Image 1 (cartoon, one colour):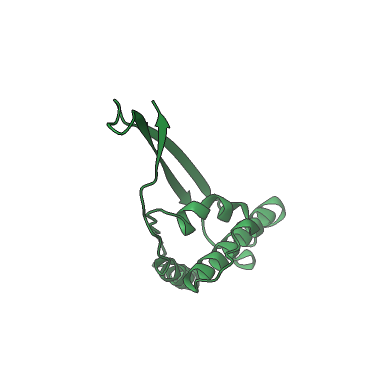
Image 2 (cartoon, one colour):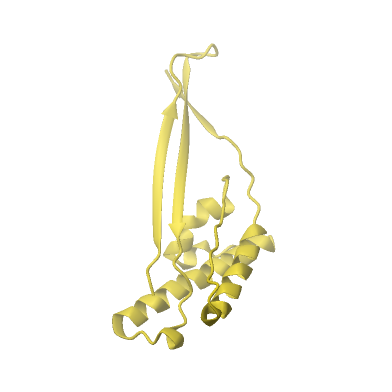
Length: 143
């Protein structure tokens, strides 16, 4: 198994000058979140042991919770289990917030990995069903 990676970049931008309605400065915050989710590890197939086996199980658990969150969002449930894993806590804003979210799913043409590729494509299909409402939120501060 290879571990996943989540990188988050947060940026603030403020407009220069004053506004006609009382001299407020507008601050816009944005966040770029890039997540490499590794992949589901079939432990029996890979024959990993020890720490690698524990790491693979942890990756699989995070991906399972992510799948549950995606399903809850698609079914428009009132509760989405974002707090069940660190991964979904980090991805919460991208999944259920005011954001533009893209999922890039890759697979293998190798017949040996056909089952995993089909699972990945089905997961990508579920991700495509999630809709977010993008809106600009501005914070006004006194000049």
